[in-house]
Length: 130
Image (cartoon, rainbow, N blue to C red; front, side):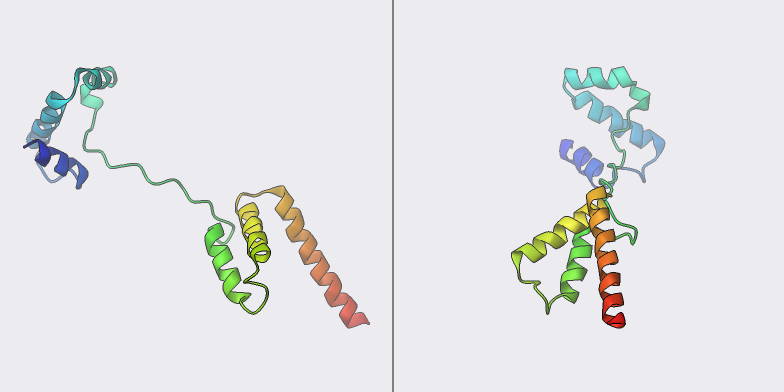
């Protein structure tokens, strides 16, 4: 019987049961607890305690403005840059650092990004003008 209560709690809980059956399961779990844990339950209030609550959502993954994670950004970038230096460790490391910096809103990498855009425009202008 003890395994059945734990199984129910970890596999969706007895949410489909009536209120009386849920209370019976709740009381059974409470009765099998050690005294120290019971004190905690009593402190928060037995009526407020829900042994069948759903687990919390996982931590939010940090994303950039396009809602991509650093891992997704680097993966897409390296697939497109396959013909370049994508096999070079320093190249990949630099891409990772930039992706993490952008996702974490690090001002240093915003500066690197803005500089690279400016430099690209400068090269484009120099080639067309000369």
